[in-house]
Figure 1 (cartoon, rainbow, N blue to C red):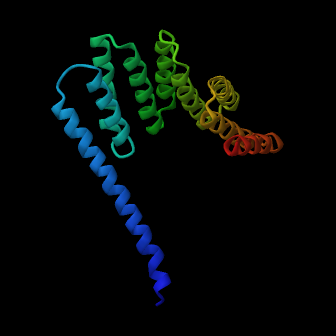
Figure 2: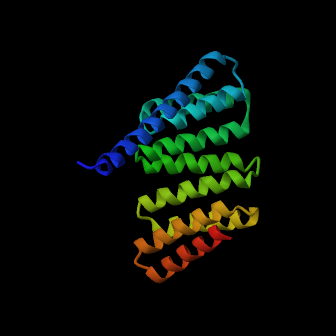
Figure 3: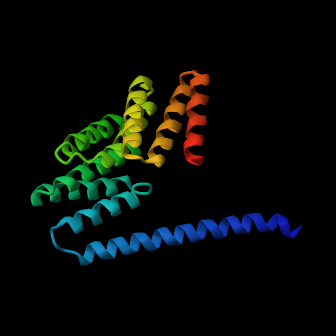
Length: 196
């Protein structure tokens, strides 16, 4: 056997191992920080949400419990911003669990709570999530509306990254609908924005 035939699998294994180790280190660090921070405050809420977001791909039950604990704490300490983030995280966990109805409800609740703050940057992410949910439910018109809102907010805020994500996602939905010319137009526009 040639060295080349062993080199690629070896490098791939090294990369995957390094990634797994770094995720494990981050998870351990978050768990330690949470255990050491017993104060019932916004720092604890952030730790709970970050930990939920870290474990969601491996343990949705734990991720959901952490996000609900964060939500309960935000209500006890009356932290509106944290409440919006907790609802969004719960929505993401339900999305990961393929419970699209609950994911949509929690995302809409995150937007409702956010109305008190008017944080348009926050809305960008939630509209992307809603677009993804509707797309997975094959509700393409609703997905288009969510991605359209994402695009308009991103342009208003000067967020090229959000604009690219909105154009790509909208293009993918158009492709699913068989609207290939419009899909190609959005995808080309996304490429132009990304390169500018």
